[in-house]
Amino acid sequence: MKVALASETLTAVDAHFAKAANLAIYDVTPAGWTFVTAIPFDQANTATDVDRVAARIAALDGCVLLFVKGIGGPAAARVVKARVHPIAVQQDTAADAVLERVRGMLADGPPPWLAKRLTADAPQTAATNPPVAGA
Image 1: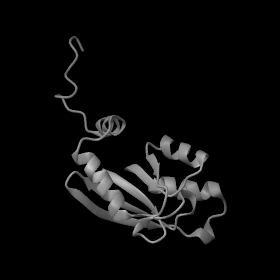
Image 2 (image 1 turned 45 degrees about the vertical axis):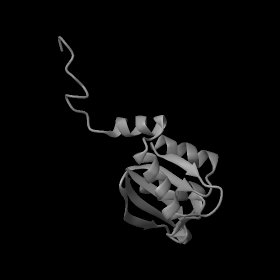
Image 3 (image 1 turned 45 degrees about the horizontal axis):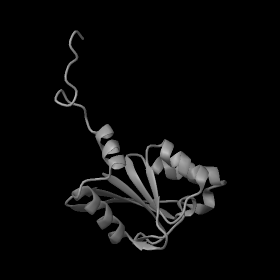
Image 4 (image 1 turned 90 degrees about the horizontal axis):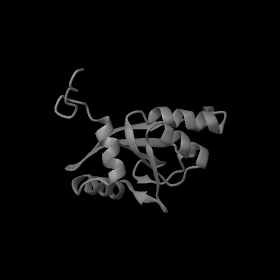
């Protein structure tokens, strides 16, 4: 499962979504996590808040969770519409601590809202979708 962290430092969730200098993307499994990429944002070349948010939402492609230090209501709604669940932390939090929390959640059985999302994204097979009689 891909997870994004809004970060200034790439070592912590320490940034507001619309103003984050980077999104650090990780692949998290019940066994651990792997760094995928860091997506930097050039603050000087972004004219408006809408542009900043749009660029960051595009960078979330394939992510399931987004950890931020803060996110505005309209931006949060756009993130949710992009099928990414935003989670705000109250204070700067080390990336390893956030990723361990997600890994533990996957290992212990994800909460129902996350399990539903992960199931919806899973490839459908004949075993999960048996043929309908008369179809």
